[in-house]
Length: 216
Image 1 (cartoon, rainbow, N blue to C red):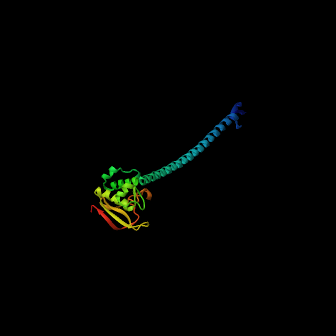
Image 2 (cartoon, rainbow, N blue to C red):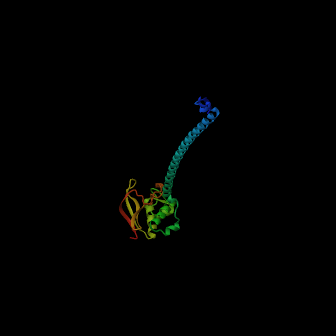
Image 3 (cartoon, helix red, strand yellow):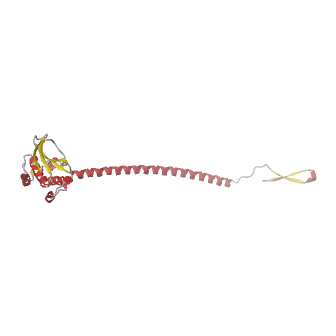
């Protein structure tokens, strides 16, 4: 601030007073000041957008995680499918002829079905007896049922050879076997490769006649 001198008549003394004139402004200082403010504002804006970008990336990662979960789910179903396929191909793990001397419960029925699937096949017009099946390696429903019934009876199972009508035959034969406290069907024809290696409990007809029994 500048000071101006104004004279006063009394005593002839001069008194210094403040001037109301505008002070000078340093342009360089002003430029530096506003440059710093602008730089700070720009940095805030950059940080703001970086935060949004990070949020977007996190969101994408979240969806990536979901996609991964979905893939895991598909893998889980593929595992189930594999398990189902393995069950259908269970007869490929065939029992040996020695295993047929110690058949017990449902596990014994599985072993017998596995042996039939690997060693015999169904053939219309094939042998009708257990001996014919042993000799040729194939037989019709009568021959396969006769062979299976004798094997199960030798292991102590209660067995019924039953007969009924199907879409292909009016005299189709299969077995009813007493295992683990209940009667269950045993279809030696349907477990063969000719009929798709079905489970031994699958049936294609309704029993109307009991042809023969063992251990009853």
